[in-house]
Image 1 (cartoon, rainbow, N blue to C red):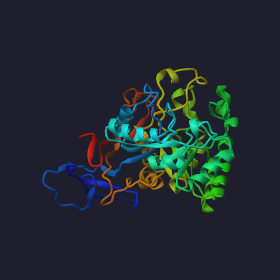
Image 2 (tube, rainbow, N blue to C red):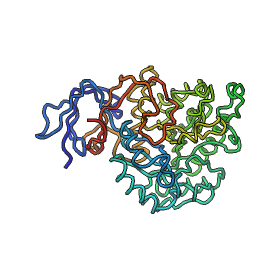
Image 3 (tube, rainbow, N blue to C red):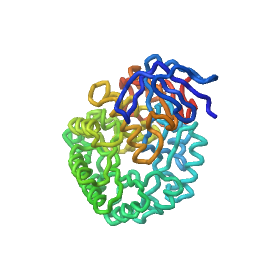
Length: 426
């Protein structure tokens, strides 16, 4: 049995109760007690929280890992190390590996090898929605769901064929499977490298219009309504998309949405100076878009905040802007990036954690993501106010392409526990 641990003199962040209150938590592999605890079992580790905050471990629903096939970008080991340091106790791995995760044997491989090499961080596979991610032939959703795939996605490759996505959503209802799809019309976005607007014109860079997201989102939401399937609009970036999402939810469509933390904190001006570390897909958009996305998180319209972790080696990013790869690491900056919104007073602390813990757990049907008796003891201890200037060279990922590089952030993870075992700090 895992050695019991008591964290006392802490503030407990409980997204389910929408409360932050002083207290203590006692746990082994599961949470044993929470609230006012006067004593601990013999042999327990006792940690004085000294006013720090205890929260459920973060569940990151969008993480790219290079292994297998691109271990120079990221491995299970390096991703696990970065996740533990960032307070991420569960991460959903995207299927764009080599080979693509489009077969149940590969799902089993990730589940077995991932936990062995990640240092204890839970790695859950997202399976490919179409074979080879080609957008044409649907994969065996049922078999891969049975093997342990927690959602189905085409990653960064939108499915152009409405018929293919309709079939996938319809078939997925048999298993109540979650389909995640990036809403972007690839023809409108083709050749674009940043948000289409005045800044793109001034920099002489081809733009990606917000309409590319809106058009595809409208189609996807219509198909979700038609089929009754569970649809996650994956990493929306534009204010234009929000009214469509709101209407769909109001009609009872099983529609959800995620947002990349970078799009909540940064905007297109962070690209100025041709900063390739801020070249993301979808692109960072206008300040008006950013503010609208923040309000949507605060209102619960956007369900989930993700890191969008997409490691890229230096040789892929230190290029002229148009030639550089899209993507940014995010496992270690998901939490401090999101806490920026709390420190500014834009989003309540419990709302932020709900979008990074409880809500992802609900969508993925996981027992984690909450502070409650008998729940898995995936727990983080955080100093919310700890200031630091991000040095991307010190990130634990194998790649260090962060748009937060040299930015002042607040919020540091002091300890991370998974199933009661310490995997970071201490």
